[in-house]
Image (cartoon, helix red, strand yellow):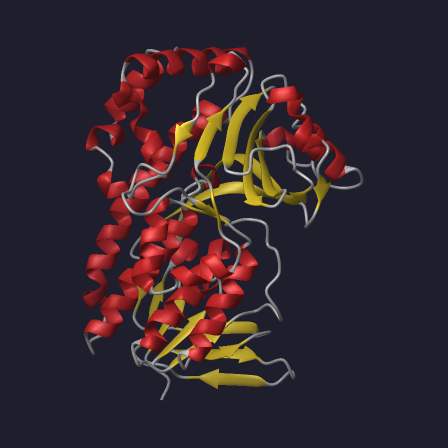
Length: 410
């Protein structure tokens, strides 16, 4: 009998398969792609996420998959004189961990899936039309690569299909969604004049930009922009417009290093939606993990770290007890609700600061920067990129803190 079916072979699902198979459980991992491809998002792992990868036993997949340590963070912005921009040392937040990793998502997923298979899991690629039925005897049906319908009746199903929430919708788990802006991203090469261990972000005009090096002249570029521009980076000439958006006064040499880079992967755009479960992210026979269990705005960059935390927590519960009924997952439900509430709160502050445009928004950023320079405590939200949410001081998640931050910058 199959113990666990995992629907979705991304970071959350593949890492769970590794952990559970290594722990002696019978695992089937279903992935809808025929082979792992560049899906653009999910290529930045915070130091606290690296620590979760170590605990899961999948840390080596990142190094073998091309993970690149980023050591410094620069924030350029039209509200700041370029000569006043200072680098933040990102290696100092968690002793023994170092800076965050930037990496090709699909390559790391492929290695994790292979590790799971080596540990005894059954990996099924090109699994189409997956349908999950919850209950005391859950079932999973899918169409295999030869077009035949197959059925598996495991003890439990883990839903890890990402922001599409395929499994969650099928078993009746609902989300409260809100959207502040749109995002887009692409892989480029030829970024030889960009410092290889420096990531950048900032806002100018009508875009908030991000640059995440992946070594050897390659980098993932992101833009966040207003809903009115949702179609700007689509259609003929989209890539040229995307790169042109990095021609900014605030960047060194007006962003020439980025603008002259070359496309090395698909350009994708998406609504940056935050999803919060309206109840527990589970039902009898089914538990959701990763983005499928709810997620904060992508501007925060903590999705993969959360996926690793979800995977580890749920795997430990499954390996520690033969009782897999919903009540045994209560520690996971409570910790995740606490974690997501903090991340969603922090993401809303960052979105308001950096992904709103026009004279009033520029003045807001200028005044917030001065406030943060005077009072280090005002920078607390920025810690969410580096350390786990429970390690960030509590005062940074109060309405009073947010109101005071923006009131003093109004």
